Each structure stands twice: as structure tokens, then as C-alpha cells.
Image 1 (cartoon, rainbow, N blue to C red):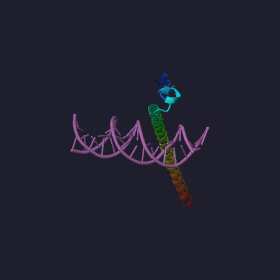
Image 2: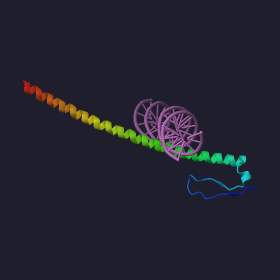
Image 3: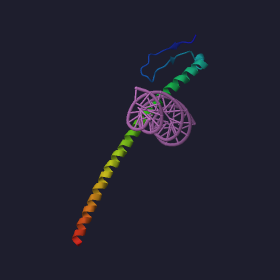
Image 4: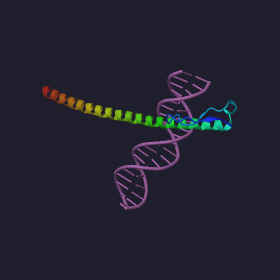
Length: 95
DNA sequence: TTTCAAACACGTCAAGATGA
DNA sequence: TCATCTTGACGTGTTTGAAA
């Protein structure tokens, strides 16, 4: 009979079964399948969190760009006004 | 109030980038 | 070279706002 030891999980990542089976059962098809399933679940969980973080960063980046656009548009408007004022001043001087 | 399209959020997969 | 991370693409479910 295989001897399994189930450790209480310390985190969501370490969820699963820790196997301390005797060496002739370490590579049994069932153990291998369980290990593969566990690895897949961990990978999916990590990727789920990575995708969330990636989206959060992308949203933040887009917000930064939008802020920058707003600032530059304001600057552009101010410069256009300034140029207009200078042109007016120049025209009146040459009259 | 109901219907429906558009926008949004999420989970998954796959491919490329990166570090050990 | 391998394991892990990052991110674009896709499919699916949910939310939202306008039109009937």
C-alpha cells in the first residue's frame, strides 16, 4: 500500500497532496496524473493573476497617456494664444 | 419594462522574452 | 536549455445605456 502524507496547505499555491510514497510508486501513472493536474492548476492560477495584473498595468498606462494628451493639448492652446497675441502686437507696431 | 448592441471584465491559450 | 513571466488574441458572461 502506498503511504501518502497530506500536509495542510500553507497558501493557495501550495494546495495539494505531498506524496511520500515509497520509490516504486513514485512514478505510477496515477501519481504522475495527479502531479500533472496539480501543476496545471498552479499554472492556471498564476496565469489568471498575471493576466489581471497585466490588464491593470495596461489601464494605468493608458490613463497616463490620456493625462499627457490633456496636458499637451492645454499647452498647445496656450502657445497658440500667445502666438496670436504676439502677432497682433507686431501688426500694430508696423502700422 | 423589455430588448439589444456596445463596452467591459474575466479566464485561458499560445508564443515570445527573460533569467538561471 | 528549461522554467517562468508577460502579453496579445479569443471566447464567454456581465453590465450599461439607448431605443422601442
